[in-house]
Image (tube, rainbow, N blue to C red; front, side):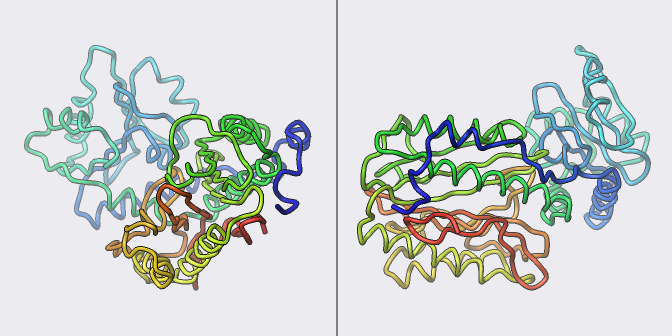
Length: 400
């Protein structure tokens, strides 16, 4: 093992943490206005009169409202002209005012009232006949709307919502960079405190506490810690594992900063790795680098996935999703959601553009034995890609 693995005591590692000093600026009011106008431009391109965005990541993107969806409808109705309208339960008005980041009208409804009738009425007031519906909304929202808009056209708003959100602004990139920097520091400390016999649950608790101490929104947004044969399962298996000499350690975790996600995975050896473990680790790193090198503005997302698979197939793994090999896509977009467009997978012809962000994680699974996943994120630049975090360097040296 290198000096990066197992050299720290837990209490000393936590004692060295303090709230993050280099904090990224929040999204400015002017940027929210630009997002609204961008959505309107895409609405005109799509030939729709109105856009309905439900509570969730997209409502946070357009209006700054960080609420999750529930059975009570909270949504933003955007039409070609006039202020956006926020549909919200009347008793939540004060809470809405406290988080709303845009100038907006309100359509408030009491518990016994039908909020979909308010949307239909607002559309009629503004002469809107075609509604683009946020693809993340529940089917119940569609049926509620259809009851009042029987003669209207309701279409998928994915092209509008994704068209706005896929390419990140400099302010968004800065928030993601902070989240990634924080999670990479947590990873370093987590690798430092591993010891023989440590439970995966202890590492999960440590990682959450470290994220909280650094000032993440709410600790770890997720945390996967797997040892030994459990690393062969991309998202882990239930139960607590205890680390043994010779095991591989896979840690996949992230946090959010003002809603923007990090998501980083490191796999390393506890003890002396076998030749097979080292060979598979080095293939994983080569596939990750090949995918990164394939990123160019104007290239299709599938080209990045194909570059990683060529490295693996040349070494006798795969082909396709066959194991031993890569059982899933090479990467996913990231931002206000941990998984969002664009996706790096076969058949995806979406063209890469500057500002798009994605994970690069062409995991290799050797069934029943072990798996290796190295995951770092990049954003597309004018002539290639830029890492948010420096990739791992060796199976016994997980940090650059």
